[in-house]
Amino acid sequence: MASTIPTFTLNNGVQMPGIGAGSWLGIAANPADAKDICLNALKAGYRHIDTAPGYGNEQYIGEAVRESGVPRDEVFICTKLGHFHDVRGALDASLKALDTEYIDLYLLHWPQTSELPAPGPFFGRILAFDEHPNFVDAWREMEGLLESGKVRAIGVSNFSAKNLEILLDSCKVVPAVNQVEVHVCLPQRDLQTYCREKGILLTAYSPLGQGNASFFNDADITAIAKKHSATPAQVALSWLVQRGTPPVVKSVRIERMRENLGLVTLSPAETQAVEDICKKPGMHRTLVHNTPDGSVFGWTYEQLGWPFEIGGAVRG
Image 1 (cartoon, helix red, strand yellow):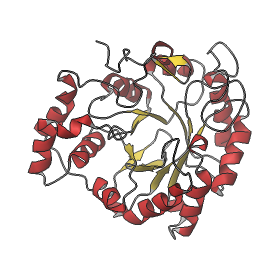
Image 2 (cartoon, helix red, strand yellow; image 1 turned 135 degrees about the horizontal axis):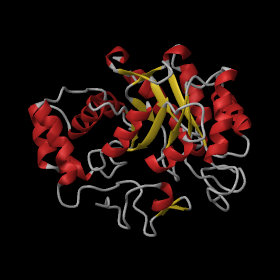
Image 3 (tube, helix red, strand yellow; image 1 turned 90 degrees about the vertical axis):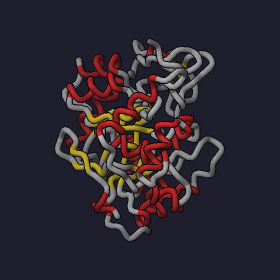
């Protein structure tokens, strides 16, 4: 089944499997559960595994890859940089936890960081952009990692066009990937267009709404799914792959993992129908980052460059 997964070519020539298996299980979850999930994902046919130090499970992902019997060079591992104070040290810690000699894709997890390195995503005071180290400082350090052979490609996550513009004005290496929230309710077309113009591949996390996929019950989605003898999830993932936005999808059930790899071919009319769902009343919104004060990890939507209003709806 692994051979049926489409591949995407990054801007440095690295090949990335077009559907990834996510490993974020939530704050209350046992990180060790990620091992069985990763093993099942590899058994189901996934060859792209997404993790991060903040998930607390890199060690278990590494154990799963080694025990799976799948050769390391056939598994595309993505992990992330959470704290900017010691970029090389953070990479070495991830390599040690994963017990691997290299990372296929190393992402700058967020454009913001906290005052001092600590376990988890952010603890302590969040730094403003005009404090250091900021994401430009961190990216310059990440550029140097490519020469070490310890990473094959570098990219970013949760970056808007606004913050990408700041980064691109100061960097030598254009990010290979920008991983953001993308799904039927949040197509991110403007951001995708911007990234394409710059040679950056936009990829989707939470492509099924992180358990909040209100669009599963949409009449257009269900009609298309019925026509293809597919599920709404398969339609949503197929739409993303066809539009050139590789998804990272998480499931704890091996049956659902296999199902999510069962892409269908959507006609142009069906593709447009899915694309237009966000135009329906109340549908164009974040399903992941709806916060009551309009901030995420200490930065406002405006600082992040995200187009959300309080309540999660997209402005405009």
